[in-house]
Length: 501
Image 1 (tube, one colour):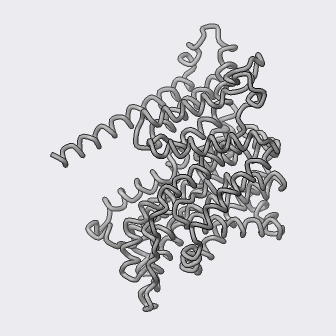
Image 2 (spheres, rainbow, N blue to C red; image 1 turned 180 degrees about the horizontal axis):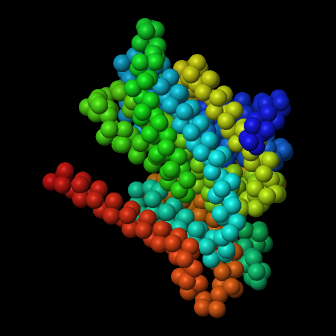
Image 3 (tube, one colour; image 1 turned 90 degrees about the vertical axis):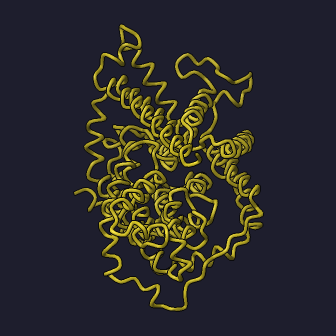
């Protein structure tokens, strides 16, 4: 198989292995810093990849995303503050275990579960992605636009607490993407007679502003909060993980790995939803459901397996259709475009070796962050507590300006980054969704292109989307996802009202 040849090639390249190792360490540290996400770190480091070869650049950011998801569990267990949204479910049982003096044991369970989940997702991606690409090659513009439409609806309605705010965030992303010249007629759109806007809004400064600067503003607003670490117990036996203890977690890990992998294939759902779905399903099936939330090892294992299993399958829609399944996927699109690599169904015809080498780097990265985490997670936690926030966030703030400017050497990009930073901060405060905004911004160009191509093929206008069965199926999937989400939120609202009554 091609993956074995790719593994051999990667293992024989010490420079590439060095980048993967660095990514495993950086991602783990960033994920473990409360308030700083892997998406923010990847957006900030994106300009660095301009000066790298395509494979090291992609592998570096891809592995940061993987280890960053795992690193969030360190903050959740030790600080009672989820380092990432996905690790909020881990916090429910991880922190009670830490208070019992079992922080080391909880982190070992989180590490093993994360590695198993990540491996499961990556293997499913490797096995299935070429098959999906083969099918995608047979889709025409009407079907591809219907896929984009379904992605917009799912991303806008499912991410976040409000359907209307989520859809508004997605619509705003499409609107911002339309700034510049019309791709067919070259007519100016929303440029307000500004020459800088004729080339549109650049992806790199926009993402740095939304994810990095917006997060810095949020942390400044919450600077009065103090992070305290629960130390490990001096009793080594409390933190020794035995096979008998982990054996009870294994069924939850296997089930949650497949839950996370399935959710990862659906654009926009993400690892946070996977973690909570797996936690809820695990608690429902547990022999000791009353112990969950009070320090059950299974309550750490289930969400950690699920949120890391999302990582690999979320790449499937990106690589085969050009549709990012997560914010990290949206950022990786930038790396592909920077290096002149066209993503979509033809990627497996033009850059097949590169794709499988990236998968190989992902597998090696899982092993690396697993070993580092199993033996050094507590050290990472102690290291983070020694970094004063009054030093960390000003450094990140200044780095954001440098990264935005170096992307194209254009001062206008810095202005875009600052404006996007304030917008990201306001979106968080008002419960709008930055992730839905960015993913929609990335998708808008492809959606517009396929929509126009479909209309050129049609003699009946928009009816072409109704008369083509596959296109109609995807349109109905998008609408069904919207209806299900609205009904789910209504049920939750009624349940809360009944409890209050």
